[in-house]
Length: 383
Image 1 (cartoon, helix red, strand yellow):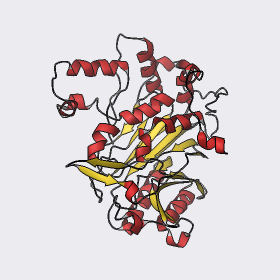
Image 2: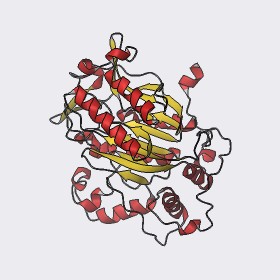
Image 3: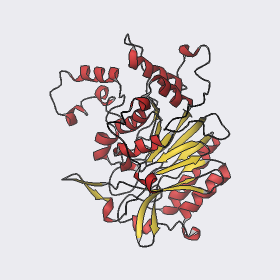
C-alpha cells in the first residue's frame, strides 16, 4: 500500500489552510498541533439538515477501519471465491469492520464470461459467491460491500453489488446503473450493454458502519448519483470498479490534489511544456503525481463525504488490462490511502466526525442555490 505524502505548510491561508487542516485531522498519520485542546478529536452530533445526520451509526462513534481488497481474478471461479474468502478473513483479523471487494471479483471481466459465471441470488444452492459473502460477514461479524458479480434474474443479466450486514443477511443490492460502453479505434472496444441490463434505481443502505451509497465503476462518472447519495445523508460512497488502462489514466486518475495550491504548483511545473495533455501525463513522475484520482476526489469533495474505490489487480484475466489503484478519499478531497496495480489489501481509518467538522467550516450545502437549480430525486418521488 502506498500512502500519499502530506501537504507542506505554505504562506497562503484561506480555503487552502482549511482543507489542509481538515485533511490532517482525518489522517491518523499526521500530527495535529491545532488540536491541542483535544476538541477536534471529539465526536459532535450533526445538526439536522436535508443531508441527514452523521450520528446514525450504532455501537460506535463513527471511527472504524476499512479494507479494500484488490484481488487478482482468474478463470477458476472456485479459486476466486477461496481467495476472496481468505482476504476477507485476513482483513477482519487485522481489525477491518468494513470490507470492500472489486467489481466482478469472481468472474473474468468479459461479455463472454458474464453468462457463464452468473448466479441467481434467489437460489442459494447455485450461488456459491453470494453464499460465501453471507457466511463470511456472519462468521467475522463485519459489513461487506461485495464488489460486484454477474447476477442472473430471469432472462436478464446484471452487474450487481451486494451488501451484507454483520448477521450475514443481505442488506442491499445495487445493479449498475450506467453501463460502460467504449470504442477507441485501434485501442479498446467493449460494451457491457451487449450482454448486461442496466439497473434502474440508486442504492443507499444503513449499516453497522454508517449510511453507505453504492455505485459500480462507470457510475462514478455521473456526479448526479453522488449528489443524490449526499442528499440522502450518505457518509461514504463505495464504488467497486474495473477501469481499463485506456480510461483509467484519463478518467479514474486525473488529478491527485484538487485544491488551489496543487493546481498552481501543477501549472508551474507545466508552464514551459508545449506538448499535448497525453504527452504531459508521461513526461515524468513529478507531473504524474498531479494526475491521480480526480473522479474519486471530485465525488468526495463536492459532497463532503468519504469515497472508497476497489479494483481488481492488473494481472487479472479478462478482455482488457485493468488499471487497479484502489483508493480511499476523505471529505476534503484528501487521499487517505491508495495503492498501485498489484494484488494487495488497502487498509485505512475512517472518522465520520471529519464530515461534520468540514461542513461546519465550509458549509457548501447551505450555499446551494435551490432557487436557481435543483437535483430531483426521481426514484424517491416514486415511493
